Length: 411
Image 1 (cartoon, rainbow, N blue to C red):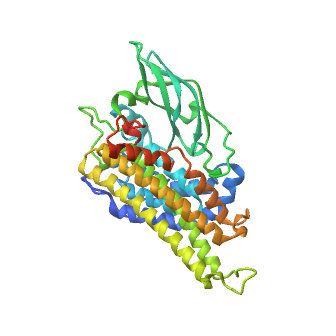
Image 2 (cartoon, rainbow, N blue to C red):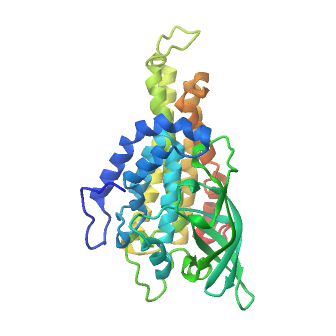
Image 3 (cartoon, rainbow, N blue to C red):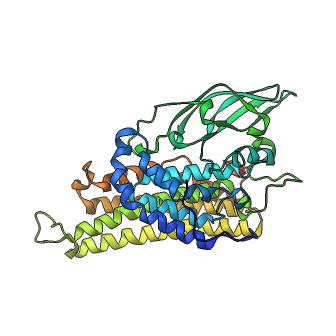
């Protein structure tokens, strides 16, 4: 059971639960020694250590993903990003799993009334949902619901989730194509161990397989018709600021916070080691005495700080849209995408510079720096984070070139 917060959420649900946010970020910091202790387990077993996931649950982090109408905390996107940032300092795989699971669970809270009731109203525990949209599986309409089939790779955190949100395509009665998210309970699918990667080993991003899985109609989110976060007239379960967050900007900003946390973790360890290690074959007894090292560290720190500023600027943009109950303009989305790309570029440069300061010993399996390096390098190359794509999207937007290369929901 999740530990109860000391502070109650605001009863009007108009703003964000600031008191809860401070407590949750503090809990993330407190967990860092435990995460570091069990980080090698993820490398060896391909999933988070059970004690780590239990600690995330006991901390109440899954309540951050749910709106207050379903017993959630009503926290801001900045708070969610800060939690992922702090977790990633110790183990980026933990930060990534937290970010993916709470992001997918948040998407479910945007769905139709019947879907929300099926997922959030079905038990006392907060649901934990993993999800993959691409490649889409197939869905066939039958009496009372749908039958789902397919294979979905890269399902981060799937070993710990109680539900899966799976992208599906289907043919409507009039012969036209449709698509959206099918929600399957854990007992309705299997997980194949296909995650054998250089980085993010502990995320357990394996392949979900569904074969002739029946779901009732209420467990389908018709994204093709409703959009992600499109609220139909007469909808009852809507009204929180988070119901109006833009889909991809939110998921992107929280993911960038994980990379920034991993980079900050590298920098902290490089600084600590610099006071203890010499520069071999030189007169420096301590690396920190080198003026060149001081300059390189300062340059890397400035880049990380700038990337963090861009990331949290975008969180603030998302949170402001939620408070105003307004959609971002296409131009705001494109700028958010471009700034996110710059954040990734800056983090990549800073991490590479820090690894030269860390030296070859930092690549030893026993050194936590190598895990942060591998995981950050891997996460930056997620398809949603690729800088060259983001820069093109922003450039096309600035020049008024339409259509852009991505659908509006994915910018």
